[in-house]
Length: 177
Image (cartoon, rainbow, N blue to C red; front, side, top):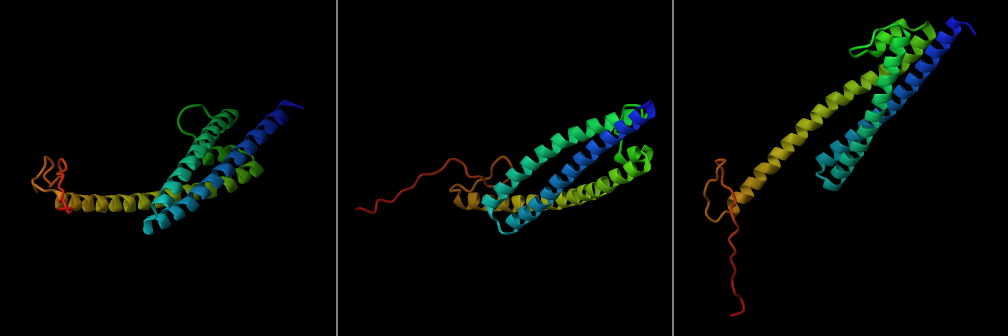
């Protein structure tokens, strides 16, 4: 095998490994999209056990994605070096694809494009769910303040300018007499 064939085989192998890693990232992102649907449903129905399960599943998926992203980053750097791109900075998949031979470029872009679109959707969805969660948390905090205010025997204002429940006042009524 001559040097040119060896280089092409190395490019093919690295590109294939990158394609597999990107496909696995796509699968995990699709899972996150489904979990976002579940999270939204649990949020709408105030199903706290389901919310907790969604958060736990999301954390697992994010950890898997972080591991795959490290793998992706290492493959991108290695492929970049093989293509003569100097190290440093964040190298984009499209930049790599531009330097790959036709079939490898097409294969890489065929997997990378849906992944990028999925990441954009997830980012938008995450922002909406974050805002909804913050609004609900604010609402619950307001309800808790109202409860604290109603149960405050003294009805005095605390340091934060709102009625706070201080130490509990224990009251009892002897109904046996």
